[in-house]
Image (cartoon, rainbow, N blue to C red; front, side, top):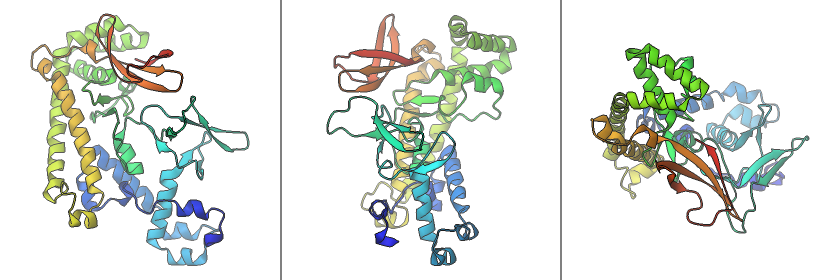
Amino acid sequence: KGSDSEWHKWLDALPRYYSNAVAMTEFCLTCLPPLMKKLAVEERDAQKLLSYDSIRSVPFLADDIKEGFPRDMVTWAYQIVYTRSVETEDGDLKIIPMGDFFDHASDYAEIVPQYDEAGNYYAVTAYDVPAGKKLRYIYSNPRNPSHLLARYGFIDEICPATYCKLLPPTVNEEMIELGYSQEKMLFYRSGEVADEVWDIFLYTHLSSVSLEDQQLLMQAHRTGDAATKLALHDKYYHATSAALLDHVDGFIEDIDRLIKKAQTIGVDDVDSIYIRNEHPRLPLIHKHNLFLRETFQNVRDRYASAAMGGEGVNWKEATKVLVEECDETECSIAECIQVAEDEWSCEGGLGDRPKSQQVILAE
């Protein structure tokens, strides 16, 4: 219906330019670290399934679209659906005009989506939101910046953590039980390492030195025996911290090569006509790689001395607690680690502002 469509104003407001994996050039793909590249290739392969034959089978498309198969328009339609749709509880995908204009939140979202029995969408505020404050919605796991870049085409500037990029040759059921997943195996920008990462390094080390202690670890994990688990971590800490350092050093070496590759064609030159015309998404990829490099370096700085036989940071200091802090107007998430008995160091949250409520969300 063109401009006569009741959806025309919404459609006309949608972006024409994208920076996600589907829009990247082949050279851009060569500048991505292995896991990010795998995600990008999967995204691009999915888009390629939108073929000439599949377009012709859509009954409500105009004949000139079905026969002409304008590649740019087809790709644009795919990008709209792929980046703006939400999955409902029954597994369906829906686009909600205007409901797709909320920005992404990496800490605490103001908007919680709800549906009534008829399937109507409601954007419900999670707390008493002050006038003038952004209304945000969590697109996907905020601790997976690589996925956000591949799917949506942006870098979360305040992303607190990233997947540690540990890819063992095999992953068994016990490792999954210990928490092996991209959502839990995290390196934090502050340099801390998630408990699940330490558990996997310990489990892997014990598989070659003590199957008895390996099963003791699993038993302690299943029964919630924190004391036994902590004793095992302390016993093998020098070995697991050395393995951690080896993994971190290997990744930093690889990411440095990718950073240098992008720099060789002028990615750091903000006025580069070549970059703007040929690889306009490369600066975003470069920023992503620098974020990973910084995070891994912070982990290395925090644990390197222990891995080489020094004091370093002990395993107990790696334990992180997420705390929801609220006052009369808003809530926010703080990340805390115990630095001494009854003494905690926290980042984020409401800072020094008076709190009406503090709730531990996860340890």
